[in-house]
Length: 298
Image (cartoon, rainbow, N blue to C red):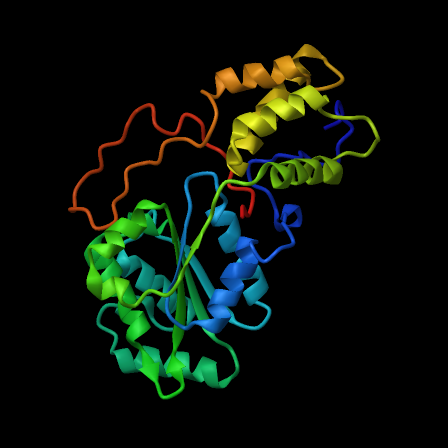
């Protein structure tokens, strides 16, 4: 940071919410998801490829909703439905060891009490493609807790695009879902605005951190995938630092591209949603480029 005269790294692996970027239009996914949660009580589905910013979107939306609502955010990557339900119970002040045998009326009473107090309960499940069919069905039992005041809990599932096809194979789940929010690659002008905002927030002087040619290579080769742009830009900065350069130039950007294996997002990892139980066969070369999910793409 001293070499570049920066307050902080402009493309960190784990960015804080202070680095959030919005297109400022109705296409912005955060706006769309918040409007979707407020307008439709049915479970919301957010889909996007790796690097599109699903986890960051979940963090941002959860931070906004926590001003008024009770938000439970968790990941299905390392939990089955029993673990998810136990976490929900713990967050609601109930005994997590009784989550499986707990009568629905006990959970409903707790959710209703929060609702009467003016706080909705919103469950946000990231990495939802890791859910197996029975786990998804068990989790959706929470959506069945309904009174004359409506649903007692609102759900948001975030996962990769293949979730849509798998949900279509399970009509009992598909019938409960509301509209989908899709995360798509950025348009070039939005990608440039995102890149410029990150650099402007970090630098402490007027010195240009990237040459125009380097910036053009990074933005073009990222193909609008924010996580890929972050990874390429950070690696190019490392290469320029190793050279003792005062700017990241085009050659640094091109070498970073070669090191990280080419343009675009990495191939998606195998999904477990609605698959048979058992070990997952992982590709040893999959995920060699692991972009940080640092952006809300449109």
